[in-house]
Amino acid sequence: MEFETIIGLEVHAQLLTDTKIFCNCSTKFGGSPNSHTCPLCLGMPGVLPVLNKKVVEYAMKMSLATNSNINKSCSFARKNYFYPDLPKGYQISQYAYPLSEHGYILLDVEGEQKKIGITRIHMEEDAGKLVHDEHNPSSYVDLNRAGVPLIEIVSEPDMRSPAEAADYLKRLHEILVYLEICDGNMEEGSFRCDANVSIRPLGQKEFGTRTELKNMNSFRNVQRALEYEVKRQQYLVENGGTVVQETRLWDDAQGVTNSMRSKEEAHDYRYFPDPDLVPVIVDDAWIEKIRKELPELPLARRQRFVSDYQIPAYDASVLTADKALADYFEEVVKLCSKPKAASNWVMGDVLRFLNEEKRDIRNCPITAQALAEMISLIEDGTISGKMAKDIIDEMYKTGKSPRVIIAEKGMVQITDESALAKTIQTIMDANPNQLKDYRSGKEKLFGFFVGQVMKATQGKANPQKVNELLKKMLVG
Amino acid sequence: MKISSSEVEYVAHLARLEISEQEKEKFTFQLNDILLYIGKLNELNTQGVEPMSHAIAVTNAFREDRVADSIGTEKSLANAPDARGEFFRVPKVID
Image (cartoon, rainbow over all chains, first blue to last red; front, side, top):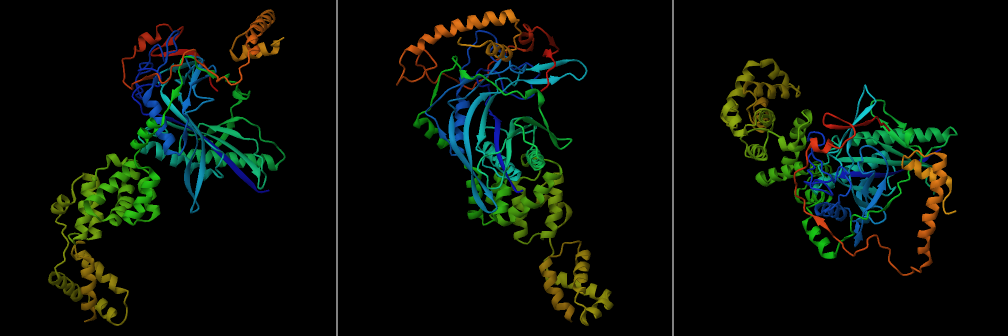
């Protein structure tokens, strides 16, 4: 039987505000346990939450960037459940009246643009963190994270494969980082994803029973977990079993999903309006003010790179996937006016260096100025492309500018024809047999002579000039 | 009856309360009385009346995003029934 996969994603993104959503405690990551707490985020009796205005504005930015409709009025609700990371016994979230609804983002699926619907975006508070004791029946609670602002972005069940889901996630991540409202760090948990997945026989209208997947802390794991889960459900259905609606945890080490048994019973969160918080009214003037603050978004930037710089769409998507990388590339182009060369060097050598050391472009020892200078030196013939390969290695290792490296190593390219002709003559004299063979038709030996010239000049000879001269001189 | 004893049991479980059979019966009657009393409101015609969640018509009460001092770990843990080092300590919970 052929199956169709149906995936919807729920993303939680921590907002980059300085303070928590309802109190003035710092949101900084890594403070000593329980140091960023106050009576409000500890859930003491008698306290009153007051909404951080920046949280609303950041959530509005994401709403606009995902083509969502911002509701004129929204409000907060209490989601009741008991877990020790939640000091009040309820999480303040939005339920019946979220900030925005009915958005979408565009994905490239096999060369076509596909719309993935966004059901809603709402604001809520994060919970604290639990550390479990391995030897004793105790857990330790750190409430620094309790009350850190989150937005939850809920997608429509519009994705049809794990790869599509991973792509959607990357695009969403990209937008959040471009907007500078979330640092996007998946390992530290500032960008988290849960997935709902089901399968149905191809052609069937009704959705199958879905499972919810949790605990996937990288793009790769989201895709792996979904791939595993789809296979598991197919196997079940094909062998006469049924899929049970449940939450399953991804086990990275084993590469499987496991049922979260303790949560089998249906959730009953008994949502009700939070009487401590007043409704948020967003008027058109406010929306327009926020819209004006939006930066150029990844999709627009990608299209501009292709049209303005004439680089391939693939290159544009690699370069714009990281805002800092795109900024770096544009700086290089501005300084050397050679977009294609800039793209090749950034996508090739610079990214290779960074990937090898898992370094961020912001900490790249090769500054945009230095790279632009090197590209200009190739363009004006001071150095060859081959020399540039060695120079860029040195630039990465030492952080020195190309001119300094060239001066230190005496690496200026030899373009002087008479000097090169002299070298070639010496080589011809020293290799009479090869010369004879070449002249009698063994043209492959041309490469041998090029190699000899490069060796004799320690790679400094201008390759085009060497080719030209050799073609003339070898014929005799 | 506005509420059954099994509903009382369910609500008690959601609230993580252990109640005896006697209490269950008692609470069922008490909650029933409360619900009957509140039910009087249903006699009003509310057609065309917007739902409200607040008694006063205040909106957009905001705070600026400026950090103020937290109270510190020591004070935070001062009321805790159990603590260890800089953490609150609770019975182990893994889901």
